[in-house]
Amino acid sequence: MNIDNFNADAFLRDYWQKKPLLIKNPWDSWTNPLDPDELAGLACEDDVESRLIEKTDANWRVENGPVPEARFGELGNGNWTLLVQAVDHYVPEVAALIEPFRFIPNWRIDDVMVSCAADQGGVGAHFDQYDVFLIQGLGKRRWRVGGRCDETSALLPHDDLRLLADFQATDEWIVEPGDILYVPPGIAHEGVAVGDNCMTYSIGFRAPSRSELIGDWCDDLLAGMASDDRYGDPDLPLQDNPGEIAPAAIERLHAMVTEALLDRGSFARWFGRYTSTPKYPDMDWRPDAPIELEELRERCAEGIPLSRNPASRFSYIRQGNEAVSLFVDGEFFECAAETAAFARQLCTQTQIALEAEFIKSDAVMELAATLFNQGSIAFA
Ligand code: SIN
Ligand code: CO
Image (cartoon, rainbow, N blue to C red; front, side, top):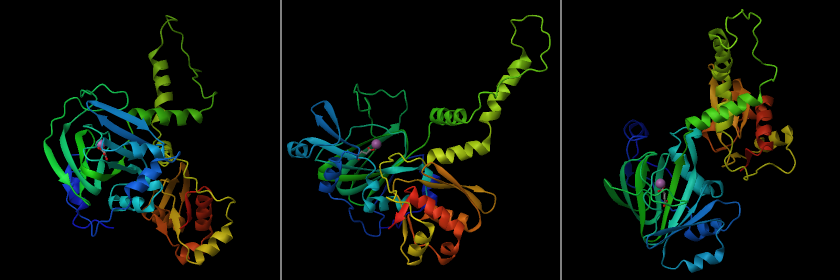
């Protein structure tokens, strides 16, 4: 499925991170990729993250999954919503929904959450920290959007949900299958199912917080630091008062910290590894026995395409004109010449049939074998 009638350039300029946009069914043809029953089945699985939210009078009840199968029989006509995280990792047809949104860089894309609600079901008025495209899959939903919120916005008292105490809608739409609502971070919104079997696919994004960046970057720096990399003062002058921490000492101490923190090259390499670390490492695609380079070459030559593990994240950083550092699943690979071309192709396609030129190259096949053996790619 593709989205036609959509101008990514104009969207980035006028809406991305700025204001909500309703995109009326822009697909060449829309088919709902997952049945409500299949979603319920996923929510019963141990290693799938899911939640059931039910509204009873003025109370919101949250149950964390796995949801016992019998639970679905008890729900009846209540106002409930089932939410399942990272469904793209389990259902290729759901993963395919991300592809039209690849005009946003891979490292900003999170995963696809799928919800299914009974009539009047919803998760209440709230705001998210991230951008989201909400694709209506099946049934109808009334979306209302409001103003910008932040940490100071008043919330209803609740242990698990961050619901807005005061939600004023400024726009309202009833969406139908194939319609897409884009909501920027911090914008209040509320979706309520109009009729049963209301399915919504949330293409979610991520943006690191400053505190996360500083905390994790420092942890990485610390892990690589030697205990004998220490303050020294071979030029210590006599000072009048032994109590003074002299300006020259502060200067030198401050430089010890900032020199390490300001190393842009190390930061970039760390960030690539950090941002490509999978959120759900359970999607283990590692082969039982490592594949040998020649076996991989032979099978690629037979035309069997390689698929990216949907839980793996692929990104690169340019190094000069052609070379790139490739980041996959928290690992990094320096790539030049044809390996760089292969790396770039891997970052744009979720499935690739290797060209003859790649199959001939030992460097490319070595990289492919490493990625294969670490479970980041496998035969389709
Ligand atoms: C939903 O799918 O019900 C909720 C999605 C959202 O509001 O972020
Ligand atoms: Co939301």
